[in-house]
Length: 268
Image 1 (cartoon, rainbow, N blue to C red):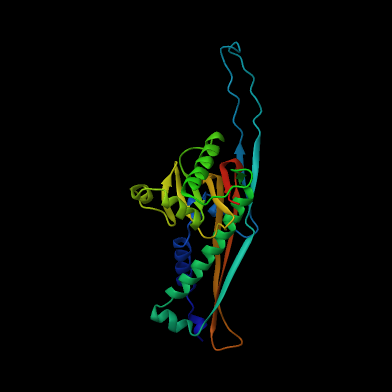
Image 2 (tube, one colour):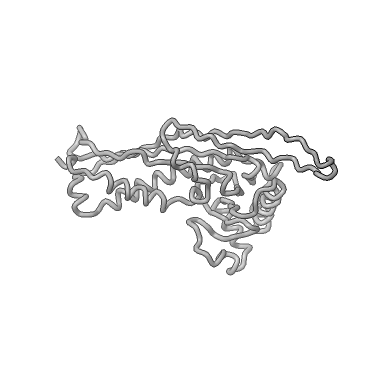
């Protein structure tokens, strides 16, 4: 039977490569906890509070140590998403070297699913960057929205490096209408997937998965955590037709670490 010679490593490598290649937002996030990606795990992220700075001389060169508190954010690895496809003859497909179409499709689907979840978590954990009913339908209004996000991030003492803003395609189009060709080209460095420009100290990332009612979400790279693991790939015989089933499982989780470092701007 074809299933006897199934090589899961080939599928694993192809699906993982395609999964990574089709990510837009995830590469801009904090992925340092990836080694903890096991089903049912909880990653405990500790945010230490800042100590109080005192005038040592005015205090008579004698100070009292304060107890530093910390806040804990729990990142639950509770998302389990799977795919299952029929392959007429696994041996024939592997021998012909034509797995790319299958693995690319699986990787794209897993990437879209994960990024949709990540964006939902970012929106749920973000701070509002505007109040009232605001309609963003001009280039100037789009740039104003980004400036407000930048101002709020700075007011919240978010580091100026590694800032990003993910925007809808319509919002990106408005921005590009109001930028020169040089500004639209971004930096001289290689652009990330989905990046359309760099503006107001933020790398602007375009994603159709953000939704139509949210114009932009600005954030610092370290303040949104994501972990994932393509947990297993296997093959089995389809009991109802002359084909093999290849299926895989992706386990992941995402969490906003600090809500004041993730600012959303909602358009009416």
